[in-house]
Length: 297
Figure 1 (cartoon, helix red, strand yellow):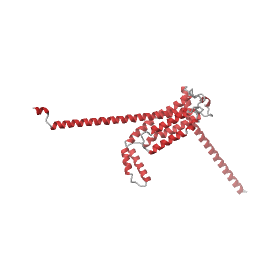
Figure 2: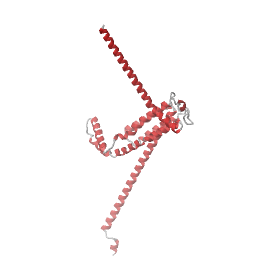
Figure 3: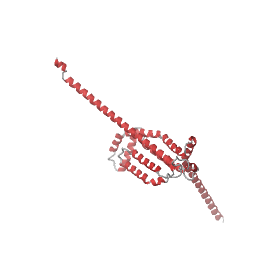
Figure 4: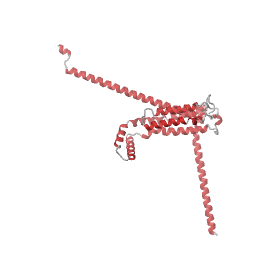
């Protein structure tokens, strides 16, 4: 009898422990879900605060907060551009490292040694190679986070649904419904294609070109999915893509101006060198032959 009682008590304790663990796991899942929902709600809270502070229509509040976010990221972009220029100045050293490691076998060891020595070369010059991808690593997750948050904001079950139905511009008042003519998705796809073209302009890397072509094809293929999205999503998407396009155009103009200045400086230096050479030749010729006045005398 005592043995059966002990077994029964042990089983009861195991059941109680199992139930406690299950309840703890359930609370953990609930807390995780609540945290996820709260995180996804931050973009909507920012838009609501901006709209309350400015009194702007909802579509303008969504687009304005998107542009403000991108403007706030400009210091990161400037840091990336500065590090990219400094990294470009190390190309001769990096090319020499690649040549020195060419004979290493197997290829995996060669790649590892090339990367390690290249990293050390950059750090010795106080260059941060990871800064080259700093903007995409921050910008892409932020864009996805913002789009998901805005998507939840204009969803049919959102507390702001009624306001979103009258928060669009005159030609698309309902931000919770897809754009009937489908022009907003067309503009979004065009901006994606344009940004990818400008981002890879001048590159000869087969990998980059293949990635660009694949992303462009995916954007075109996904057009039917874009058509079904609420118009309010494009109030965030299009300003963000347009800002990226303006960034790329400004960067391209800066590169063109830099190349033109370099070409002008080179041409000026060449002209100065030729002029100096001509002057030297004239002086040497004059010194090696008597002047005409002396001959006349």
